[in-house]
Length: 73
Image (cartoon, rainbow, N blue to C red; front, side, top):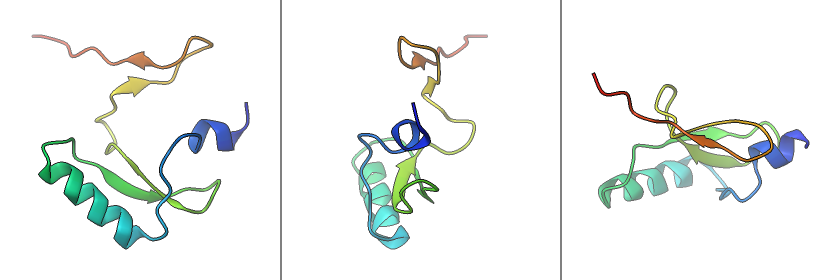
């Protein structure tokens, strides 16, 4: 699997960071998660993703991503 498929497949590509930020604010305003915009090194477009340390899935092997389980203290 190449870098494009790992990084870009099925993700929305925004034409600019401004547009990406606007959509991230809209999602947050609708009760969704906080998202950050970033420039993709593969397609050079802008995608949205969770901030560092706030991942919802871990990358894994051939069976797809593994959900992150919240640890209860």
